[in-house]
Image 1 (cartoon, rainbow, N blue to C red):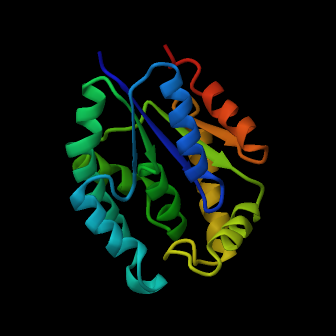
Image 2: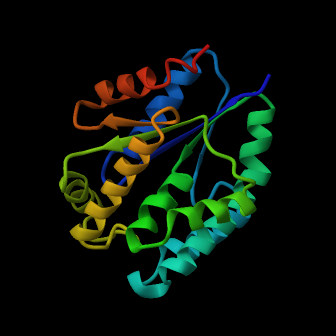
Length: 207
């Protein structure tokens, strides 16, 4: 029996790392075999590309080059890990996926149709069965990430508040345009409440 493919998305500081672990544990408690992975990364080749993308000066890559690098890493990830695991019956939970490219590079004026066309070629258009977007009020996530990182943010976290506002707006646009597949989840509450909201947003998929 085919498994499911889920992605957890959101801007900086929304609590994704915490919620990926909690959501995976909640799904495993229901008897599901869960594979947790991340983007960029998840396979040896994709992790190599991750180092290129996440490290160095903010201006190291143009938005077009970033988009191509993310697509290349994702193609390897999908071919070698995600698709085989789902076909084997596992529930794959991915910390970021193509939604992040659409939000982060889309906030830099890369056309959404071009991103999806590249995804269609590189990853054969594979989309999650459900994408969960953690959402915080404007500015709160960026402020949390500054407190968390203590000045050691990666190339994306280090960008200014205007960029992060644009990213959050892109995520909300995607959720509004694709309500059947993408769900916006309020991340302002206690961690337990946020996990419960994520499970609720998966209710129609759960066995």
